[in-house]
Length: 252
Ligand code: GLN
Image: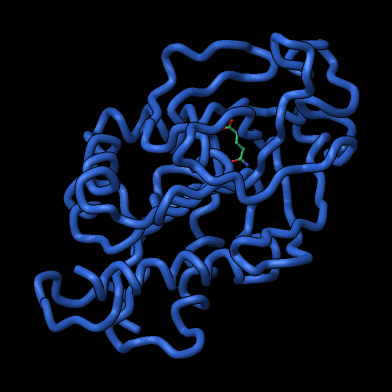
């Protein structure tokens, strides 16, 4: 596997070029997970994983991982450099597959609020996925937790879901598939719709129904997870993403 992506314009390229947005957050872990997933069951010589942070680099990718971290930081820094626009253009324009993890899921969303701060008017988002997310839905770092997840439509079961200051998706548009939802009571003693919500808001919607706690979503080749698959010791989700990138490239 080439480490620099090889020559950019070689249309005979069999391999894929996958970027990990490297502005802030869990970059190294995702580079490692994508590299391993690219080798299974066997990769191509010219497969590449690239740490990307400029619009020019985004333009040359076949797929992108937006890692977990701090979505306000990732959003502001990438908006300033035109990177946010470049990513949006590749996803909306060319259907570039993208895996958004935790802060990355927040970046993909149409709208976000924060469990303690409330509305977030100034936070730059990509808005490519018609979902509403609540940031920090389970509370602070000490309310981080792990739980086993089944994601039936990806044929993944017993997946170690690592939730670190995680968001939840509390509403989806009609074209977005909820892949996985937390049952009531799961979630380290916090979270919308379950546990000890310390400020009492958001546990129910306007109609008094428990708000949903969806933790994985998909729309075509856009996948978002509230948890960190790169920390699961299980490559299934990265593998699914890499397969989507390979399929997409074969179609183009
Ligand atoms: N709490 C972070 C945010 O709102 C996300 C945390 C993470 O990516 N692990 O951006």
